[in-house]
Image: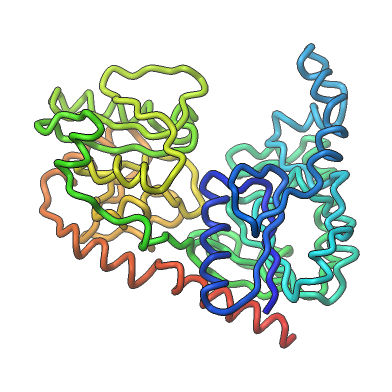
Length: 390
């Protein structure tokens, strides 16, 4: 098969997932190419598409926003989530669309134009992996941000409904059973092939290294208990570093420290957090993970988070808030799922986690068996094949 992957970026959790899937599909003998708006990696199979047109079209709204004028539709949409389904980027003009047997869309809101794409693709199989809930709404990425009665939310929701109605052969991938249950029977899923396929983690790259060596290279104390926290932007309040810092402080043990890997673009500070900065390579992130004793996911919203999977592949037990995907990912052998999203529940979860024995090698084996790239890529291949048969 010839498979075209499309995503807005080739970095971050979604970008990593796409690149990993592309590599796995190629290893299985398929031809793959990837189109992105923003290209940061040096991968020759990834092409930046539509960037100049997108940037030029966005400039007037950007200048108005800078000076406080939210008068354009784009600027008015920003507070609602910003997953705009219209764009000057018409994917149907790309030669790779004609080349491909299957088009696989990932994070494409505010990148490609939905009406022109779904209206022009015809019977060619299209797969959409839903990394958030934006598919079901006009602009919001999650229900907690949804303003149902806002005119722009309603306008774009109707525009999406009409665009998706033109799709003749579409597969929808939900990342967790939580999402399947939440959106069971939704009108946008009806008539489409719907599957639950979890994210993969590259277990050939994410693997443990000796803890003492990792701490020595990173300049971390060998006497502290380290809880690692990883996010593309660690200061993003949705990711929950504030709550994690408070929960650890409430435990009252100064030898428990948090190691945070990611960008701090808001220039925040936490008294018990050691900032490691953004780790651009898997090897660098593996070193941080391997230096820690535990991993924490205090996020309020996720589809199927990649960060705890990377930690589990390195043999770390995980404490997590009960976000989407944790029911499939975490069990009593590899971690603790908190009873709710409060600081108190997180404190209780950390205490429980630290009081249990865990087998790091067994935790890693479980990840290899259930979430390795080959396992997940084969599930996608089955979906591609079924849509082509349709």
